[in-house]
Length: 156
Image (cartoon, rainbow, N blue to C red; front, side, top):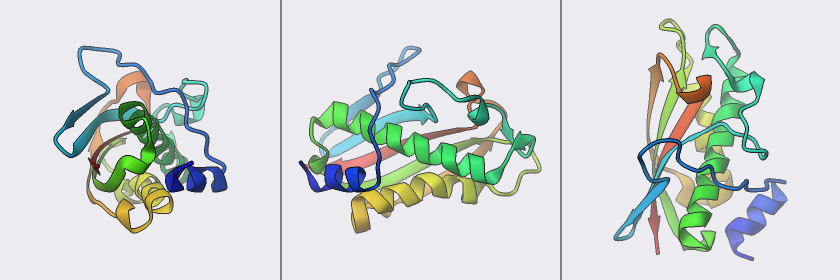
């Protein structure tokens, strides 16, 4: 068991089966020592989007629920990384996260919502989980998800 797997177990996190692409794209691409993972939605272990994670921040979805959704997105990123690498110990660092928050135009808490994903990466990867980041509010996401997160990892 890798150190990352041990930390996930300590946190009580089970990685789900990675979501299959729903359009003409790959779930991940490895080029050189970079692993680029396509945006992951806040799907649960059952591969479904909970009703609590459908809709817009600022119009029915609380910042706390949005942060929880971003954490689920990060868990799904790690599931894709395992599928790509076979072993999470090959992750050297999280280089960048990009967050898309389905929000009303006046919702000002985007950064706090995205901390759900950022905090998980640091919890799981330690210092190697600290990353560059972009967070943007968007008008709509697939399946009416409230959050989507993409990632770039440096890998061995």
